[in-house]
Image (cartoon, rainbow, N blue to C red; front, side):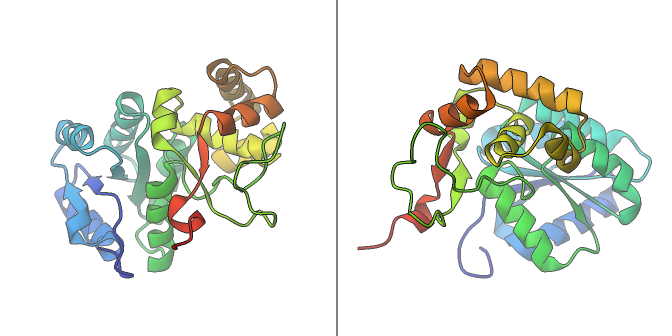
Length: 240
């Protein structure tokens, strides 16, 4: 349970180093609660947990120099592309963390980060599987207003994970699409996601193909119409 009494998606934590694995569990326990955290002994166990728990978040430890953490990140992204992935480690692990984010991880949890920051990133990843940096803003589709949108545009918007899986969109492709929906240039998106302009263009091309779109505006419009971006039901539907 969360501190406010709600629940979060299960977090599956893994680090090849036993001591770091214990520390990682304590870190996630502090924001998600022990009942919401599972510990994977190795990468095969990690993948088994993720397969058995749809919607779970993978929280993976990174060392400053050892490549095993990055290998685990890459396997999760390749075999379970709809899974939200967070990486964790010390400030010295910035370089591998940056690489992990560039390849599709949603964010980096530093051991010394404020608890509120860790909680925000974990909950944001659970809600969107796209990380907190590029969360969709409530904006009307290019060819018409969104059904049920408030005139002040202040309701919450999330990524529907079932639609993401149905459309076969990776976490990184969703992040790029969200950037496009916010009117960011390829350079702006690349800076936020540690990607080159060429890589952003490549992701955009994949998005056009998967969404049946011919340009950026149409891609955003189709994403809304296909149900990828939806109002957050817990906050958009007032109780009667």
